[in-house]
Image (cartoon, rainbow, N blue to C red):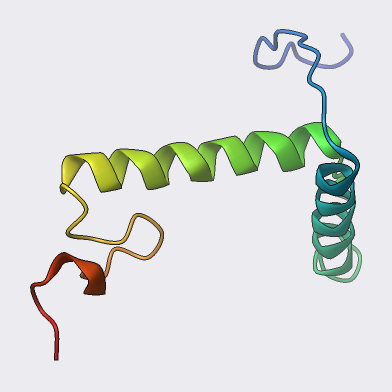
Length: 86
């Protein structure tokens, strides 16, 4: 009975600069403000940081796999490669 066991999570300690703490707080407030009416999903600092790490990983992987030809964020051709410039 009770709640199912979720994904295993390792506890780690990270140190953030005061400016990084402001960024995390702003993103957390944005998530909470855009979750919609009658939505009970709970957001916390861990979720914000996990999503940021995942986004950064995908960005870096795309940039590495394409040799910088595609933007890691949106997947469009990168303007700085000398190709596809209009």
